Image 1 (cartoon, helix red, strand yellow):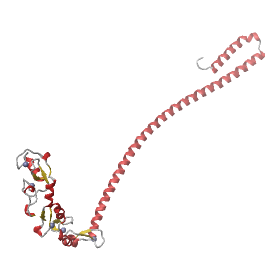
Image 2 (cartoon, rainbow, N blue to C red; image 1 turned 135 degrees about the horizontal axis):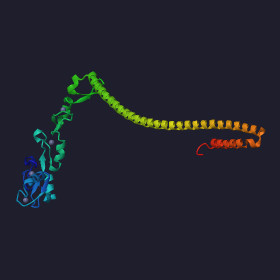
Image 3 (tube, rainbow, N blue to C red; image 1 turned 180 degrees about the vertical axis):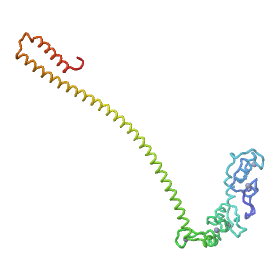
Image 4 (tube, rainbow, N blue to C red; image 1 turned 90 degrees about the vertical axis):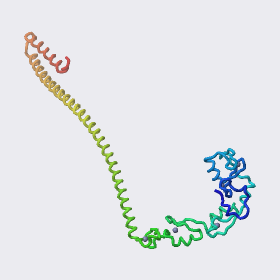
Length: 284
Ligand SMILES: [Zn+2]
Ligand SMILES: [Zn+2]
Ligand SMILES: [Zn+2]
Ligand SMILES: [Zn+2]
Ligand SMILES: [Zn+2]
């Protein structure tokens, strides 16, 4: 939308008016047919039309161009009143610099700068308002560290504030302790499971070793028994041998050769058999 023509001082050329809003061009664009419009006006028009509102020539957004430089200069040099004239501002300046003035105009309505305050006030009165604004805040003079809004000034109680904060901190701490406890428990659980597994593996290995050991022991026992038996038999054989040798010596000493030849050969046979059995007891 353009600038209200009533605000301008002196004559405004017809060519500097928007064909749509009939006000003085604001942020202008120009169609190939040389008709000019405010950017907002022509964009709004082309949503539902596809021609120039002045002469019905077909146009679209892509053919719009900036205003000729000489027209732009004429436009910028126009003098107009500040939009806050009705509130008391008497500023008149060029269109080129009106935006800058209005941003800083002492008569412009601006919001109070305190968070939460909805008051709109002229810039020149802001300081006065800030001094009494209900949303102005200050640090507690008693040193509790709280920022007090002036509306709450009379209700502020350092002890109560600190107690509330303490309660908050305490419940937060309890929460954290609970969390830590849960985590610790779950970690311990997993370690315990791991240990139980390991223990059962070890237990199996021990059982295996025990059974191997008992097999070895029984082997040793039977070997020892065999050895004992062997030794006994050896001793027995030694005894018999000595006996027989004795007998043989006695015979040799005082018997006639012919009478005892038969006895002797039987004896010899017995001896040989006996030794054979003692020294080669298995598989012979
Ligand atoms: Zn317009
Ligand atoms: Zn046109
Ligand atoms: Zn002003
Ligand atoms: Zn305020
Ligand atoms: Zn306090």
